[in-house]
Image: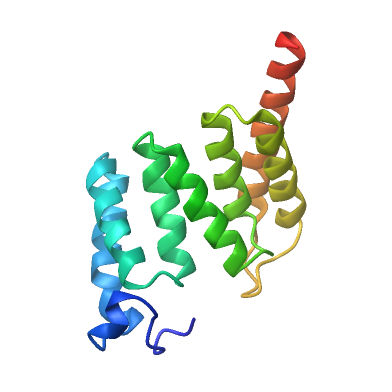
Length: 151
C-alpha cells in the first residue's frame, strides 16, 4: 500500500491515510522498545483496525503480541504479513516464533526454514534480510536440537 493511498478499515471511514497513522505507529514502537508490550499491543491493535491491509502494522502487532504472551494473535498478524508480502522473511520468523510458543513444533520448523530461504534474497525494496535469516537459522537449529533431545 502506498503512503498516500486511503487504507481499508476504520481509518478509511474517517478519510485518513496511512501517513496520518504514522505518529501512532512511532509511539507503538517506542512503547515496545521501552518494555511496555501491553501498551504497544493496544496501539498496534488500533492501527490494524484502522488499516488492516498495512503490512508494517501487522508486523508490529505480531511483535507486540509475542512480547505480551499472546501467541495466537501474533500468529494471525504474522500470517497476514506473509499474505501481504510472501517474499519477506520477517513474517515467517514471527510466525515460527508464535508456533513455537503454541507448541506447534512442526509448523515452527517449517516457518523458520522458510524464513531462512526467504532471507537469502533481498526484499522488493532491495533491503538485505541477512540478519533475519541468521536469527531464523539459530531458532531452527535450537528447535531441531531440542526435538532430537526429547524425541
